[in-house]
Amino acid sequence: MSGTAPVLVTGGTGTLGRAVVHAFSEQGRPVRVLSRRACKVGDAQATGVDSGNDLQWATGNLVTGEGVSAALDGVGLIVNCATTLGRRDLRATRCLVEAARRGGAPPLIHVSIVGVDRVPLGYYRTKAETERIVQDSGLPWTVQRATQFHDLVAQITTMQRRVPLTFAPSGVRFQPIDVRDVALRLVELAAREPSGHVDDIGGPEVLGAVDIAQRTLRREGGGRVVPVRVPGRIFRAYRAGGNLAPQHRYGRRTYDAYLDERFGLPGHG
Ligand SMILES: NC(=O)c1ccc[n+]([C@@H]2O[C@H](COP(=O)([O-])OP(=O)(O)OC[C@H]3O[C@@H](n4cnc5c(N)ncnc54)[C@H](OP(=O)(O)O)[C@@H]3O)[C@@H](O)[C@H]2O)c1
Image 1 (cartoon, protein in one colour):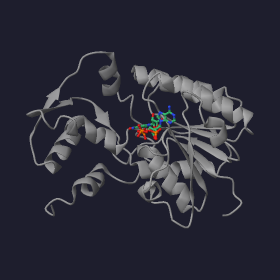
Image 2 (cartoon, helix red, strand yellow):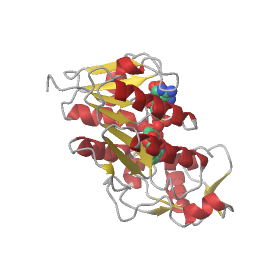
Image 3 (cartoon, rainbow, N blue to C red):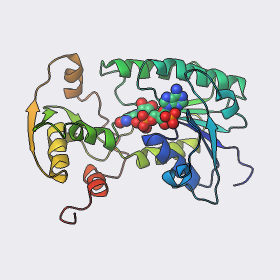
């Protein structure tokens, strides 16, 4: 597809961003990654980018603004997968939309999280504010919220590896989604007119946090899961399903399939 303007994937080095770079590249669409660091040998292979389809790279920082205008030069679409995991996301989002407005106002697809308006976590409040920045940006925009990625859900268990017991919040459920499924959805959205807030997407199954911890521990060699009822508003909102989108089971890859890929098939290790 020579002559097609590149897609700028901010956060193209991240968990979702790498899958997004791969998915657009598979479509033959030129992709430019925005990262704070310089391109390293192996970056293209890490995303599985076809060697015949050059990966463009722009070094820039959305919080300081350095390199952002240059990264946007000639871009036909922005897919925003960058996050600082904190309040600096507000500054980063503002920086991106302001630079985009000055630079030809390409459409922007912004990734957010299911339940940012239901679960009273600080990070979620920030994400909800970033949605409003995009909404008021004057750019043609789409916001896609997704449920938790498989990696994040697994991390709740794997981060407790050195503790003799594994704790899991009872009554909490997750609907984990594979980043490759999210990436496919973003490619689908890129082919449409900018659509504003689109339907949430979630993984194919809703699983209890305790069940997820047990499945993960089995692959890690065993251990005991201790269900804990966590008090407070945040976990009440999780127990009420604020993080779920059961009516929008978009992802096809299950959590067990993710575990098979990560730890190998049971009995084949
Ligand atoms: N994780 C989940 O379960 C989940 C679920 C639903 C939605 N989301 C959303 O999906 C998006 C991607 O999440 P993720 O888990 O893939 O994130 P991630 O793995 O933590 O990656 C974050 C990316 O942001 C980039 N970044 C950080 N600070 C930056 C800055 N100042 N300037 C430019 N780039 C910067 C990083 O690039 P460099 O380090 O290379 O600069 C990195 O590639 C986020 O919007 C997140 O809220 C996540």
